[in-house]
Length: 218
Image 1: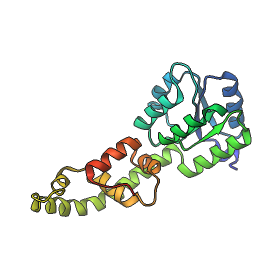
Image 2: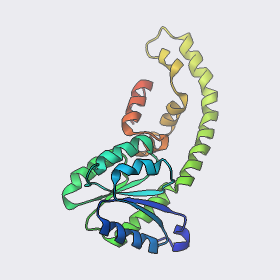
Image 3: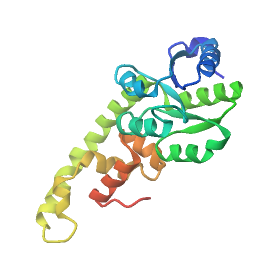
Image 4: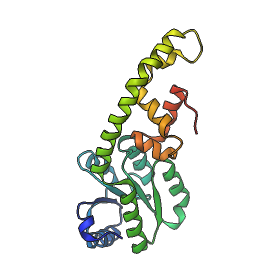
């Protein structure tokens, strides 16, 4: 388990309409050294995410005005790299499973066991890194991938132009080589959710990109 000094720069956003739960959980995580921001109005979350770096998000499913699944879908579209842990009641396991299909990395049932929550938070940040670390990794990987892409792009496009009468080769002229090469390189070592998060878009968009580029599922 992380100590306070290790956690002091780690930011957690908790979204729930229960003020008591927000208070209890935020105080517990703050005692462990985490920086915790709480929001009880889910309709304001996207605006916050657009203006702040968040390492991890805790999200309730059952809330007024905007439920957790709807909010998670918006996060999947605009902030797919953000790890989200779902908080759910005993009757919401089906919804929690749906949330996993939209990028959530796990879920905890209410009433929440604090030691379990802290362990899940520690593990998630260790696995996915901080927001700054994810940004730096993305820039680094993009640079490495670009070198590979530049070497292959001329061959692929030249091959396509020379064989444009053959079915399936002409579309290579206009594809996004970055996404194509990243999918080919990483699809066997990552789940669909991890690969979508690596590319910073939703699983639905990943499916559409695969289809457009002619890349089958692993």
